Length: 306
Ligand SMILES: Nc1nc2c(c(=O)[nH]1)N[C@H]1C(S)=C(S)[C@@H](COP(=O)(O)O)O[C@H]1N2
Ligand SMILES: [Mo]
Image 1: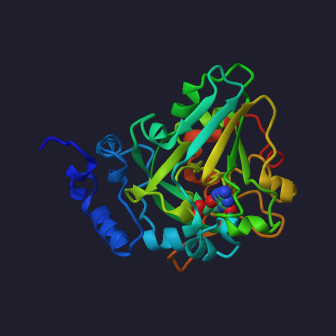
Image 2: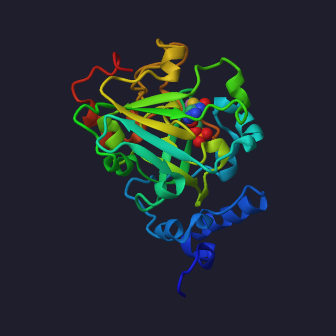
């Protein structure tokens, strides 16, 4: 059949049956529109979904992934984002990409979805608090976006900012963090093929509590580096300050690579609890992505650069 619009593509054609079933549960829960509704291009590109970067470990359920969250803009309890994020207005949306770039500019959401084929990436996420999940994101490499603005030779770091609107985000009225939520990467980390901008989850539009409409995912770093609901990206020469390291510099460093050998000052990072499992498992260096990323830190003392 000629695909004229996204609705011509049956959900069963773009997702494995297991995901399709989850999709139906998701729809039944009234959680919203399918990624296919974003446009035929985005939906069709999901056909190219398997990625050599994905883990084959069991995925967490959509329910686990969408109801146990950190998104302090909506409150500090794990259940707050699912309860409160409905007030986030995700359309229209755009990201400004500025700073050390030959062609800085603003990208609307529709444009962002066409930058590169959308892929499913099944990644482990390890929160600094000691829990972990396996999450099937839909996204594209951050590098594809950055290349479009032509970073200059001075672009050594990338700074990210989330939306911070107290009208939409009740948590922003409390001073728990210095808003907007800010994060940063070194340019080589930002350009690494594992680093993605996620726009979907389980083949659907990203739920609001997971950082809709577009969030970063850096799977070898603690979860707080994976900043949600991004509105600004700045290429810069100096290392950006970040919300968590500003709030507590001795506990949260700039690098924040998952490292079972370096404890948090108040707890061990040697083990983790995979949400849904009873027993703890060992945390792996770089969250299990050492083969792909350890070379980025060759010669660096990872105790000093925590
Ligand atoms: N803007 C923003 N981004 C954020 C957070 C936040 O509070 N605000 N929490 C971080 C933390 S601590 C984690 S563990 C992950 C959780 O992502 P998930 O809810 O999609 O699992 O989001 C990160 N991104
Ligand atoms: Mo986290």
